[in-house]
Length: 277
Image (cartoon, rainbow, N blue to C red; front, side, top):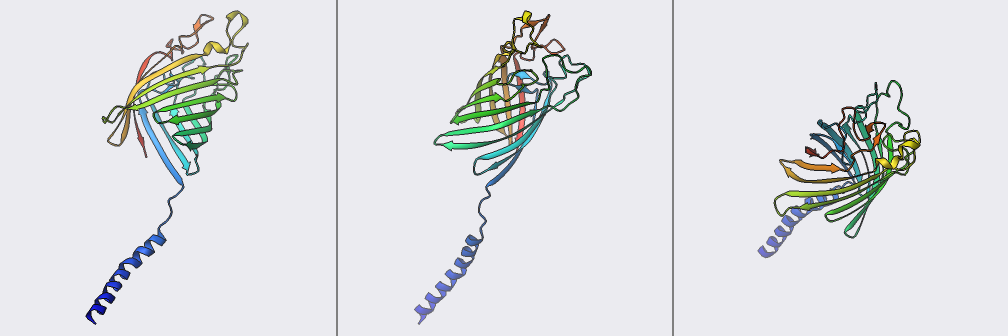
């Protein structure tokens, strides 16, 4: 009889513990397929495709991203800029870049493919006398195709219309090759990048026959080498960039010089800190 009572007691205790566990298992919510993230960063300058967008001055940047478990994503990102205002466009003011984008990522084995659309928006005030001949509003639409494998990433961007203010430049493109290598167990990553920007079109309004140029005179190559490290929940980076955008003489000017006679493609260092949340 005692043995039967002990068995009943053991069964009762087991049921008492099992019942809540079963209820918890049944009531557990499935993982959400939606992910929302944000980022904010402060950099000693804003470098885009090897060119300073802030004339070597600091840049505050940030954005928000949405991702779905299916691979779809979308986001918005912004930064202060001055490259347009720094050009010889009297009365014009463009101090902000706002990028909007959407795309789809699909892993195939060890390779992740990425296809999407990105619009560069530059809200601001048009120069008093209008834009120079051969120059248009800088807003730019690009589609892109990328692939990443372990520490290597490649991305090809194609412009759907006029590109960063250059008229008659539909079909301009940019190739980005980047390697990110962990440096042992130090927590540092070595970043190496090669990029090639090409501009299409003849743009006779900007390049008269006597100049011997077309938009291809804007073509250039850029390089980046640096390190990144996560520390105290922040992502630190130090990057060295250089380009061959020395500029082609045109009417006594150099095309990559801003209004302060500084080449925006000069070799330079950029220090940054970013927080992702």
